[in-house]
Length: 315
Length: 315
Image 1 (cartoon, rainbow over the protein chains, first blue to last red):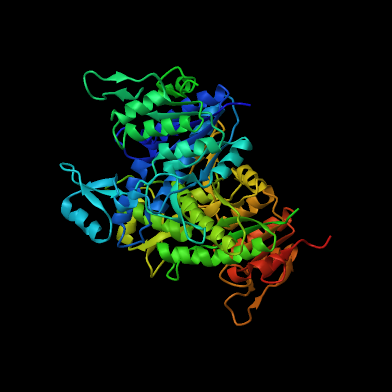
Image 2: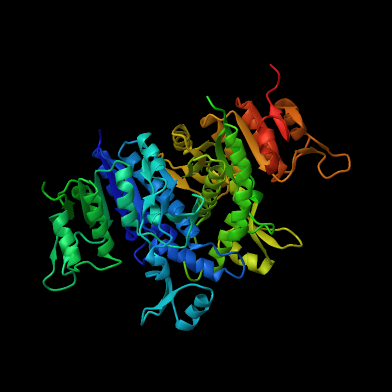
């Protein structure tokens, strides 16, 4: 059986150099990223893709705010949904184009995907994930009065913070699996998935939150038969003592060694921290290999030859 | 084999009484609609759902406009995509909830779906589909200067008009079929699908347009093995001489009879016209039955016992 790979694309793979989702810059960034993914498909891999949505969901919140007097605002879970479709179909078109250029006629399917979280997750009581634009305090206070949580980030101003609860289950993973089994390259769990909680009757209800996309990918991967997960970001390696003169890049590492480095506080929360955490979880749950690297190196990283490569502890 | 039904839900099934997509009103409308769809599933039907997106995509355009100085605008094809995910996941949650109440544990899958159109479709040269809010002429002229087409609708003001090209192919129909074959109830081709055109190299590119959702449904239905298509709208029947004192409701009709009534100009363009056209096309392509009726009557209409029921001409 062909190896199935999961590639988790960082938000930087989907935005222009200025960090915004301006249509042409976004298309160009996605096309560039898909060239590398197409190389992987050519090499014989079955690929499942997930992606971040930070800049895009932030822009939707700004639109909500600025149009609030004229049209209804949509809650954060539906903004998450919106970004799955927009980024998803951009990835879809770009990857099919890159494959066609390489003589491969393959279809990409984009699945709207929910991720179940715990309604009692501590993130809801104390939101920490910053999202959207910075505003001066007086402007932020208006939204606080409407029930939102905003925090003071110093010089750049105040910014909304939302819950980033732990992903417990990618609810629609079985649909992603059905599509992969039918021969589609699948885009799923974009932006970490639409966060939902289980109601007392058993049904699922959307909640205002943003799930970390790498942690969601680690939950999705085993269900869709993925043996190798690659987290694509802006740097080639996770670093020990990042930003200090005595920093060094982590190359091959066992999951136990990486857990020890994480426990020693080497990785920043909200940045490399969740990526390292996702890689650890994936390998500990039986994954053969997780890698963290830059977009350019995903093929080599998937083969264990570039980036920070995390493998199981020796038996 | 269980019968496979396609239900095309009108925009009214997804908005509040004021016609806007305010979150709670939208959730309530969708939940009400899904009670009827769940009844159909209980009766043994395999259901594929499509839905309109007029009010929702209109609201996204307003948000684009009002936030244009702060965050990039997204093109109409990506706005179409956004509404597939938001309406799709609302339908998904509501239908799973309605089924759970009836003791049925079934999953609904929402597929981001593209519809291919002809780049030379006359709709692009002469856009006719009104969308978004009315504005006074001086405000509309600003957008005309940016390249948009706006038309004077008299008393309510000016309104943007966009292309509504003919659907040629639902590109992702095979993915919808794979999901249905795997046992999922499928939501696909929402808002008529994301319009795309084929580039010279064979790849697909999004274009600014809105495809009629009933015509797209008629293209999707045969590919996903649907024998009966029900178009749910606000009225129980299509009418001959609609709005006149001598109007009468069309009940059972052959496709030839309905085509003759359509040719005689009984159905308004942009309103009942495309629904009648979609029903005719579906039956002429081999569909067993198409029905046009109100949401409350979809189960009876699927059985040929309510609404305007269109069947093949006698052999």
